[in-house]
Amino acid sequence: MKIKIDVSELMQGMFVCELDRPWTETPFLLQGVLLENAEDISQFKNICEYVYIDAEKSHESIYPHLRSLSRKDIDKSKIFTSSSTTNESEQADLESNNFQKDLKVARKVHTRTRTYIDQALEDVRLGQAINTDAAKELVTEVANSITHSSHAMLWLTNMKSRDEYTSIHCMNVCILAVSFGRSLGMQKAELEILGLGGLLHDLGKMRVPLEILNKPDKLTFEEFEIMKTHPMEGYNMLKEQSDLPQDVLDIVKHHHERRNGKGYPSQLSGDDINKMTRIVAIVDVYDAITSDRCYHDGMSPYEALKNMYEWAKKDFGKEMVEQFIKCLGIYPIGCVVELNLGHVGIVVSASDKTKLRPIVMLVLNSKQERFPVPKLINLAHPKWRSGAKKLEVKRILSNNEYMFDVKDIIANESFTY
Image 1: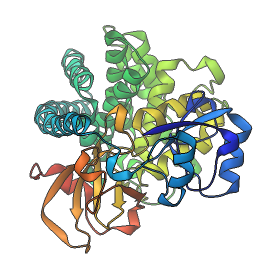
Image 2: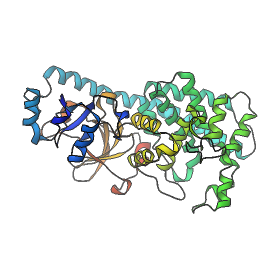
Image 3: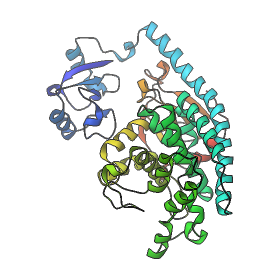
Image 4: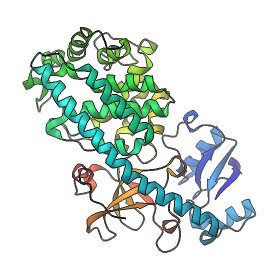
């Protein structure tokens, strides 16, 4: 239940779920904020005239105050009527079932794309031309799959391997770029350009000596200068294949450019970096810093987004990064969360209407014991929203707070409801 209130009525314990303006026009990183102190309240008072409070997500101690504001009986056990509960139950079950179906289709596209990029990287390594027609066909399949259901493809981007970084990274950048472009309202032709640029963006790395590409320590200045040649190497190689659109070539050449002019190879700055290239640059960094590499362990999705928000102004532009955060959601797919009763699981997906209550694949029970088979639950289902069984996300865990391999769980198709 949402209650519209003037910001003068804000108090600790309220959960702000909606504003009188877009979240992207505010300094808040995520959509949905629990007011925990006077500073939180002050921020909203300085920005908004009124906000909407989610009664269910707010602390129980302020129910009497919310009741007086709304003039309605906010009894948590009666928030849903029987008819609305039935509809929401059906919708939640449908979302869970659809994910299972969409995942089967997405895995097939994912496998074909992985086979292609492995072959393309090998062709470049051997000095042979790559099959760009096959790349276009696969990217069309990826775009179609994401347009139908972006969650299933984004789920698969978490199947990362330290030893197979380049090929998996190319595939993930393709998927993330198309998903981001779709959230921005881009049309099919633009999505396919983004996907093709993302899939091929790092081909030039196959021209970098392996001892530099796979070096476990920090690169020397001379080694980094060699590494920095890979965008131009990829561009020159693909330019000879004149059937590729110029926007795809631009992505390959300039995906390491930065808004402050300190990128490479051309030191472009500001709006000289086109929108397509900036999209791929953002998702390239996101996938890189959330991946285990030969020289570092990856961050959690949530930690990565927080860091990228801090880097936004100088690297990518604040507005674009905020739009990317909105695309991935409050609980990014693949992040590990702890629920209020102690369960631990991986976020699978969430509909636009229930971003605060995602579908979660439970891995550990409330006693921190491993489920024999991961259990898929939709927190938006009414049965998890109230009473003794109520479940909700308590917090996002960092990578060092759990002892299971997310990649292995995602790779395994076995789960139950």
